[in-house]
Image (cartoon, rainbow, N blue to C red; front, side, top):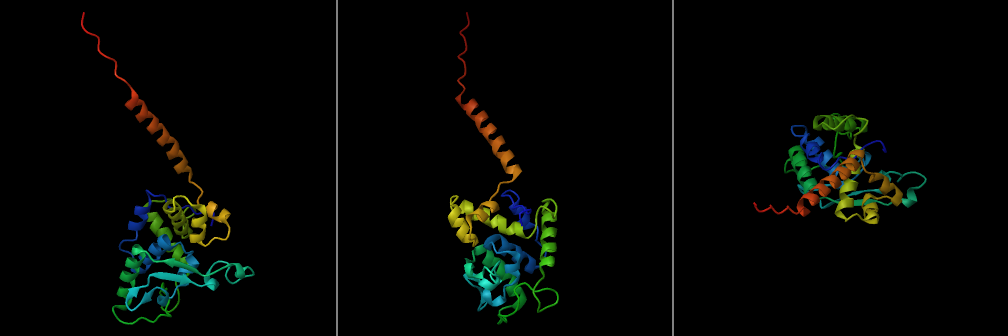
Length: 222
């Protein structure tokens, strides 16, 4: 969704903290979105067994081709399954959530990872959007027209781009994009970032002027 903005670095702590007190399901959904880069439809397609085994989070999660964007259409031959490692943040969120749901007992691997109130059915996309809009509103980040579930994926793309030392091709591969042009669209800068860059140059120039200024030697009294 081109209209959805990524979460800026300074705002991300606000988004991470906003779900505190909300259901662990919602906290896990947001954490996985920020740390795996899966689309919301892909996250909602996950079953418990794809991330959970023997009371622990698995080291990685795999989404099959059929569940990926374009994976069941006329271009499906160009789409491959996507495997993403689960980092510590993802594992912690999943273990808190799924232990509260199943305890130390066995879990039915076929159950949806993110169920709706109608237990047994996956959470609907419109409901996930409502959850995210409430989080962004609580964090003070603008309107639903600016931020939504796709903001999580765009934020992930920017973090990967930075972690790879600004490697477009590696970022493209991590995101599962076939075309690097799509990746570039994900990394478009925000107007506020451009403003800050210009202001930062001014601050650096001011500091340089101060540090290089040579104080005039005081004249000796007559």
